[in-house]
Image (cartoon, rainbow, N blue to C red; front, side, top):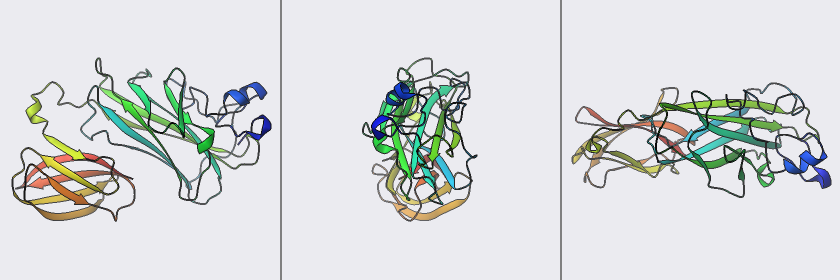
Length: 279
């Protein structure tokens, strides 16, 4: 990864002395691999060059946007996880944006960790800061938030992210860039009677313990299941609900951190199906 004058480390891009200083707090705007970025990442000419990312360069988007879709005006948590399973990339960086299907930036990006992340491109992109460009053995997580537009909400939004796995050789060669995305629809229940939107899961994200509740629950047996994003069932337990108001507690500390789909059934009826993030 390129270093700035006086050995101040920069983020994803370094071109000339003046630009090195300007980019010391992360990638320049427009490098997420999105349509609004003209499909560019920091693997573009004059930027970082190196091998294609390998299977050891793992990158994941985690969010608590419900599987049934986002709601206008709501604020959601987004995490970008980077991990080098072979520990060959001591440095890293990222850039992310949220856009609609036509390449327009939608909603508002909000910093939740100002020590590690920054906004650029007039607030349309979020990127790393110099203080967070190291990649520990356990990986690096970048966290921020996105507030969905309160009006004219598009039918689909997509989170774009590009990550730099840098070899730390003091220049821009040998760095692998991975780009990923994740799509979400507008909740089809928007505009319906709010009494039909009765489910909630909190806290989400969680450390492994969270509560699921639904106004249709009644005291008695309830089945709790978690699936990974490939559809594999990783958690299946029967519990007894004592209070419909309090909901049912899910304890899933043994699962690795990541994104899962929670399903809650009672009396043969599926009451809840929602994405949950464990961190």
